[in-house]
Amino acid sequence: MANTPQARKRARQNARRRRHNMSIRSSLRSSIKKLLKLITEKNKEAASTAYRDAVSNIDSAASKGLHHKTRAARLKSRLNNRLKSLNV
Image (cartoon, rainbow, N blue to C red; front, side, top):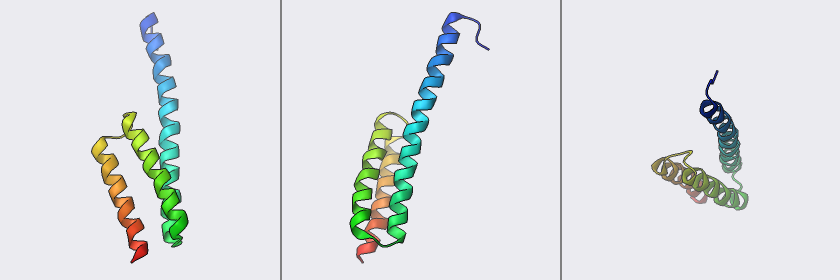
């Protein structure tokens, strides 16, 4: 347990940040799962809309420091390749 006032404040801040990061990460994962589900159902129109939402969430998470920028780029690239495979 934190003993000094500074350590207590840090513990409060860390808990608040953890909750915030978890909500962002959860919405990111949900948008990716939604996109992957639409791709497996071969729904092109809805998948392209879901792709835009997923890319937006991925970029947002990367800008907030939840994911590294190269990981975000890799995720977007892989999702885009899956989306393109529907058009073949």
